[in-house]
Image (cartoon, helix red, strand yellow):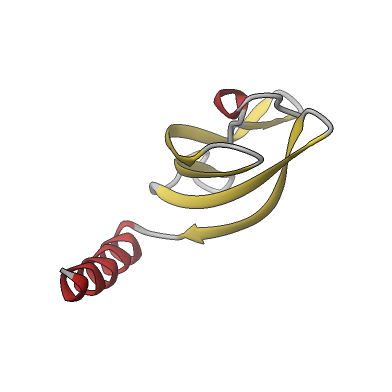
Length: 96
């Protein structure tokens, strides 16, 4: 468990094999409830290589000095990410 937002990672290794590789992260909010946007890749066992780039928005709650995952939303492709950006941008433009 991480005690600071900077220590939170998506990297995951099992039996010496890295299965999730974090490529980048953006901390959207800090505090007792923190939100982080991750860029990552999953290990493809069939191809024996990392797959396509994906994204994940994750929320963490700090309790008893440790950040614990509470919710997540995975964006499974660059195309889906672009559609999400377009939708958000349209709403933001309407508010301006």
